[in-house]
Image (cartoon, rainbow, N blue to C red):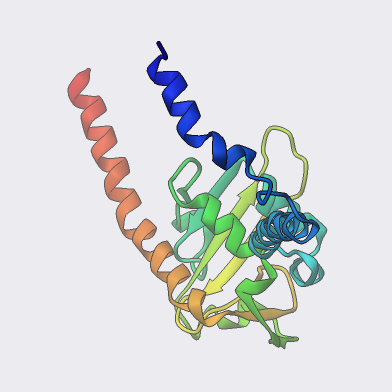
Length: 202
């Protein structure tokens, strides 16, 4: 008497023992090719997504690049044309979206490099609506503070104390100003609500 397992094995034995079923060199090479193609595609995808820093490092300088990467504190100054004593910076540290902001500022593809001008970005403060991003590392002090001015109207950006400006790529020209404006409008309300809740809990 045979078991169901034996019957199952017997029914398919001819497939495994068929002398015509053999691994040809062509088949092996084809299989290897498919695997290598998959590995190559994955590597290409990773390469395409990784941050490119060659031109951005040349424009910003290594210290500002380090600030973008490592800043423990990030603040937004919504009215950089006003005296510092009259404007309280908004603390962005820990807010959602900062990882994308850092990547945008670091990546070569975020800018139109043919647009670089030998003109301080400060010259736009009285011509356009601008905001400043302030990157700092108050505890470890691994780099000097870095302040970057963004022209919200036309998408120009540069170091506050620098002599050059560059235009953001078209896809970020509206996205970055919109992100900063939302923060500037919402963050004071969030702080006010947090303080109100704290007062109620006491």
